[in-house]
Image 1 (cartoon, one colour):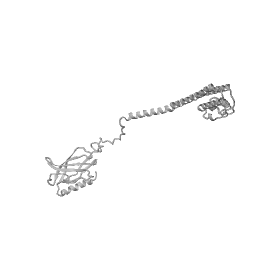
Image 2 (tube, one colour):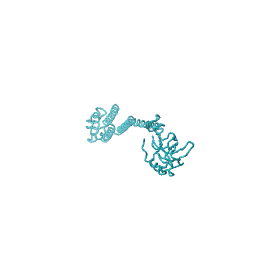
Image 3 (tube, rainbow, N blue to C red):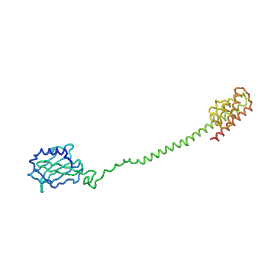
Image 4 (cartoon, rainbow, N blue to C red):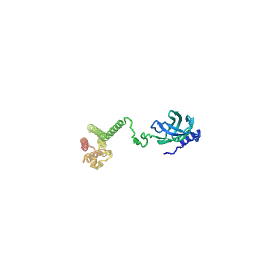
Amino acid sequence: MRGLPRSALVVAAALLALWSATAAPTARLGKVTFSPTVFLVGQTVTATVDLVVDGGEPEVFSLSPGAGLPAPTADADPELRSASLAKGAAGWVLSLVFVPWSPGPGRLPSMVVGSLRSPEIRYVTASVLGGKGGANDASARDLSPPKPQRDPPGTTLYLYGFLLVAATVLFIIIAFYLWVLPGARALLARWKSREAWVALTRTLDWLETNGGSGDAAPFYALLSRAFRLYLSKRFIEEAEALTPGEFSALPPSRLPDPGFGKEVSRLLGEADLARFAGQPFAAPARLAALRRARELATTAEEGADVRA
């Protein structure tokens, strides 16, 4: 049983001020009905009470907040909204309109309403989560567990689409690094190889046609220059700066053929004799030098193909 709410005391005190308690007739409860029969928190309820009146005849009244009833406070529970008394064929009938604000058992306290002291009226407010009979009703249920947030429509399709796009991009990246990039590098290397070979061949062809006569120094200078450029583009980056002796000292791992370094050293050594020592090499020697340069380049290309 709950204690009398402070707001109910305020209502009772205000109603007591309307009529003297000692002079008011006393009423005993008869039949009590509620409309609606089962009501919830915050729902407007009408209590119809059949009264048996002792101690005189009460006056008929109809009261409301501001017109016989005080305005309800913010914490009023229950909140009394109107009270009226009428006499019917079966006797006196008291009607109280109120709003309960707490679930479970409650009461309208005994008070002086108009010219009548009303009895205490008990009621039960059903819970929103409970059954029709209150907290002890077998139909009462527990609070349902919270449901997970629902995804917007089409989320699954968008998710699978995103995963498909991501997988496609990942496949393209992997394919680029595993196949496209190595293939591009190999293609570039073949193009450079072809370019270096063509440049050397053109120079050797020109020397074979135009270098048989005249001074040997320019012939061997052009031969040495063309062959060094070919080596720097294809096999040995520093070939333009190496001496014949340094070529012969290169490790086999840097050469396309085991005996390649010594043969290059012999060819470039002969060119240096013509360029710097003034050695006069006749046409047969020059043709032999051109032939060795072609053979060395061919051997180098074949060795590179084998290693590849």
